[in-house]
Length: 232
Image (cartoon, rainbow, N blue to C red; front, side):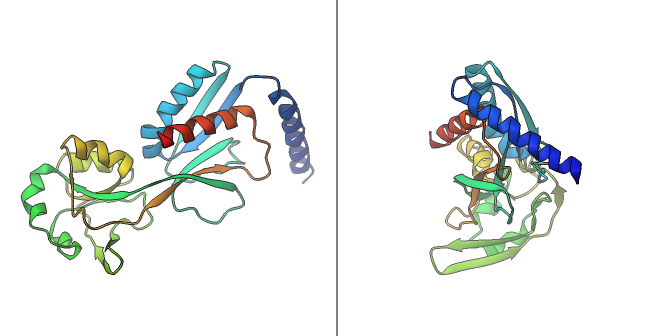
């Protein structure tokens, strides 16, 4: 108990010193960030490289994991979380959103063209993303009144989203991918957007900070660069 109290006191002292220094210095020091593997690879990594180029006194340690990292225990400055947040004592801010698309390989184009509604989908092979809370059950909506919930059977089950995408690109079956991964593949013809008139639930992109912590200039500068990138 005494140790925990002293750690808290020392952290507050470090924050106070950091706040004084922030007013007169460029961002500097080690910035520790955690993000999901897929979003981190496709969106956060390019921002990290731009950030270290712009602020050479900063170093970045990026922890990519589809598991929820404990920000306090792992001494993280910032988490980027994608989807739907659970209740927490952490401080969160929504900075963006993403859509989910059901996609398939062009070799399934004939079968996909014959689909008329989500109820027809279970006849096709499916790649399940076991990193999700419920990888096999999906609710599709069209307009304000039409809604259909579909239960798939997994022909292949994989625990990371980029690997699921690769399985779909290799013809393993249909699957659901976030737009930041699916869209480039749809535009280049590597994947087909299945039943585009039907929509899956959208999710949020969040910044999550340790509770009641001072935010150094390195955190503020990175957040500004990330949010500007998302706006563009």
